[in-house]
Structures are given as structure tokens and as C-alpha cells.
Amino acid sequence: MIKIGLISDTHNYLDPQIKEYFDDRDEIWHAGDFGTLQIADELQEIAPVIGVYGNIDGQDIRNEYPLHQRFEKEGVHVWMTHIGGIPGRYCIPIKESIESNPPDLFICGHSHILKIARDQSLNKMLYMNPGAAGKQGFQVYRTVVRFSIHNKTVKDVEVINLGKLGKEI
Image (cartoon, rainbow, N blue to C red; front, top):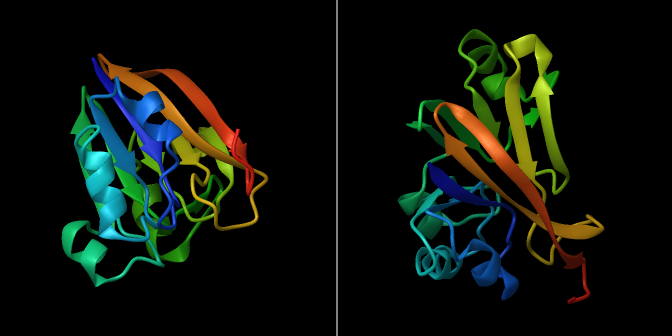
């Protein structure tokens, strides 16, 4: 079993609560818009990071993290990218590929909108967007997600509310 902390759209702000919530995680997955490499380094101090760069990330992040990550964990095929769209409306650059070769778990960020759903049209692919953990954007709440993968199954999915945008809890 592997325990994952999923985060996105930190925009150069790492909430101090992240350490507490991700301290027991085996890996942290960042779905883009880190802001700076310092955010990635701070996350690495908690657990190993798998990430992708987002549209606001500079060359420092792009040199360390690719646009797409496709990998397997515990028998679950994962595809992570920053700009992915939503079930039924995937963005044009990936639409054909996701439809012809859907992963078991598709992760993206960018929208700042938390969404976890099954895409029934793509073999019940699990879609996850952890929302935004940073202080930039229009989202009402800052969120991250924790989950586990064991024996080809995503389980124990938990949404963590870090507080309202602009207000610490």
C-alpha cells in the first residue's frame, strides 16, 4: 500500500498545515503551478514529490518536472498533467490520447475547483482535481486530497479543507 498526498496550484504558498496532513504520506503528487522550486523543495522535506509543471511555473520548475507524468503505482495506471479539463470535456491537446488510452486515475489541477468523479465513458476512469492549496485564485476554500493505493485500488480518499481563501483557520 502507498499513501499519497495530492496538491495543486500552490502559487508559491505552502500552507503550514500541509506538513501535518502529509507527514504520514509515502509520496506527494503536485499537479502543477508550484510557483517556485522552493515549494517543491519544502514538499520534498516531507516526502518524495512527483509533479508536473503548470502554466505559471518558470523554467526552474520546468527543468525539474515535465508537462505530463504517466506512471504506475500498486497496479494503478496514473496520468497527471496540469491542464486537463473535466470529465466529458477534456482539453484538446490531450482529448484524443485520454480517450484512446485512458489511465485508471487521471489527475489535473489548473481550474482551482475540487472535483473527484468517475468518468463512466472512459471505463470508469477516476478523475481527481485537488482544487487549489495556494492563496491565488477565485476558489472559496483551499483544498488538498489524501488517498491510498493498494492492490490496484484507489481507496481512503479524503478531502482536506485548509480554510477559506484569504483566511487562515
